[in-house]
Image (cartoon, rainbow, N blue to C red; front, top):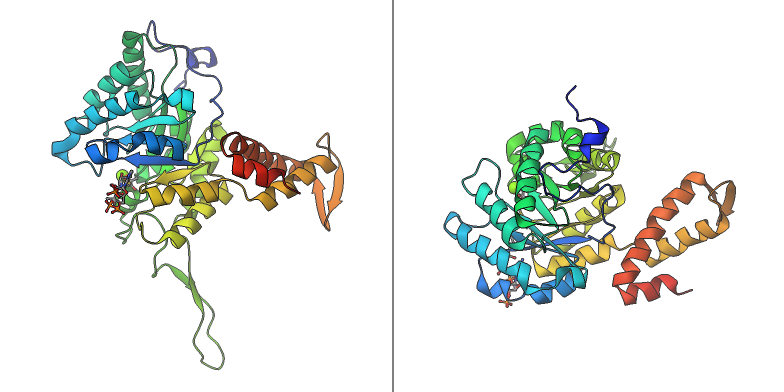
Length: 352
Ligand SMILES: CC(C)(COP(=O)(O)OP(=O)(O)OC[C@H]1O[C@@H](n2cnc3c(N)ncnc32)[C@H](O)[C@@H]1OP(=O)(O)O)[C@@H](O)C(=O)NCCC(=O)NCCSC(=O)C[C@](C)(O)C(=O)O
Ligand SMILES: [Mg+2]
């Protein structure tokens, strides 16, 4: 048997570590905003970021130069103390360096021992299989016990390798700490030997061409989404495990239109949120990952038309039944969560 027994799955992995969570806390996580914590100027804006983003993340991994890793770690711990994260209802996460790097051990030990009470989630990059999660799980339990933490720290894995992709279901199920998974399109592209130099989004060469026209006129063609399979598979793995799927980074900061479309496709396919690398992407993510008022109103009409969620009803010529009731509930519940945080949208959802 390669799996733990059901009873042991929810036992703490170290004496004195907090009990693992059986249900994930219900949180609005439309965007995970990436902060380079070694830069004093950017770190100074963290209190402001905490009022704008649902989650603020101290990034210690890629994009932080090797000679700034120590400063980034110090900056991340300072970020933990700069804001009353739980009081504010904003998530505080950190992306640590990978397990095979010279920085992982110190990243995790210092974060848990010095900022463990504030830290909601550790993001683990380049996860290859469940063994990576098991190792980090045990290590964090030891540290939680040492720090006397009462609330367990959760894990978020990034899918960045072909092997991680092939084992995504096992990764999603590896521990009760698993909160979610994001797509890492840049590393994944490299590992798969995709011929791209972008961070997410489409590619002008990846397209479908219409059949030839009889008159020989120019054939229509359109770009396709090279991430469709990956995102859909990630969503299935996450939802099977009862955790959340997230899109990830969109590197062309200047192309807000393409960013919005990529985010929207992920939202429609089931993702709860995305990453923002630049302040301008926070607004895009907020727009996309909050359901549109028209959709919310229609969803609530479905719920009202079928109060106990069974039977059949017609709304505007469209058949509704138990399954559309469930779809409507997803949208309505998300709108409730958004409304708690956003009075403007609460008003728009409630308006006739
Ligand atoms: C892209 C960069 C260099 C452009 O930075 P910039 O300074 O050139 O941009 P700007 O437009 O000139 O900045 C305007 C203002 O916003 C500030 N600013 C700018 N960014 C931020 C930020 N994030 N948070 C808070 N403030 C920010 C910036 O400091 C400036 O402030 P100022 O007006 O007071 O001078 C910059 O935005 C940045 O460093 N972003 C984070 C990048 C990052 O974390 N990359 C790694 C994640 S993606 C990844 O790892 C891939 C993955 C998953 O692993 C895989 O696919 O494999
Ligand atoms: Mg990466």
